[in-house]
Length: 276
Image (cartoon, rainbow, N blue to C red; front, side, top):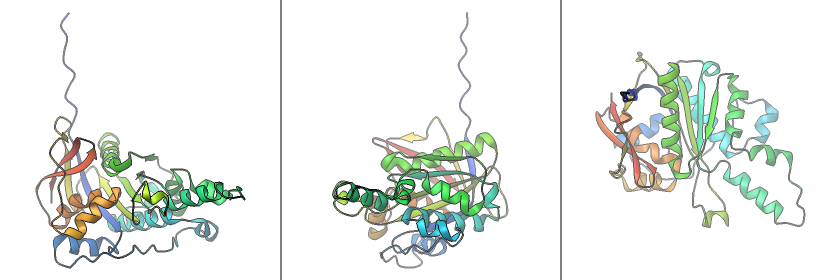
């Protein structure tokens, strides 16, 4: 009996319709684009988290850093895309979830009063940001939430690009991290909050910022990940897992064409072809 080889996996191509960015010294995508292009100096500063005004008042009071950063970048990316947030499928990806909330729970459990507040408990789950996004935007489409430690941005990007290619619908990707206070910081040294959001679509439009292509046969590479020329931006890329996106955003900012290699799993990076 003759055995036939399985057909090759299809190439994944997406178009970037909107970007949201917030992090240390980065107020939004417009500011971040200037810094990544070298048109404005990058100066590191504590990340300023805006209040999540799209949430009802009760939920706004309960929102922690993870919710604030993820909603801020998600709203910016969706506004830039011109699409309706309520209709978008979403992928949320974080290496550690709500680190401050984790610290508070551990501190309570280590104290004489071990009663944990319900707010602390429901903010501790890994899909908390996705839940608050659904509340704020009214989104009823599918939502995936994942974690791959330091590889979380690349893993989220793979998931989002696959959904766009298979379902032929736009997808919102939100990747975010928040800082751990001591003593957890000594074990997981994430110094500050950082978030990035991308609206990815299956076809080009007048709002498209870039085209990204991933070829399954060659997307995993042993070539080292791309680095940033600015030492401060490179330190940010290395310090916060969600900031591993910065070489990809630099390509969008500079309207580059070529190959971008991102940090992924140990010994295996993720390579994409990018074009304006």
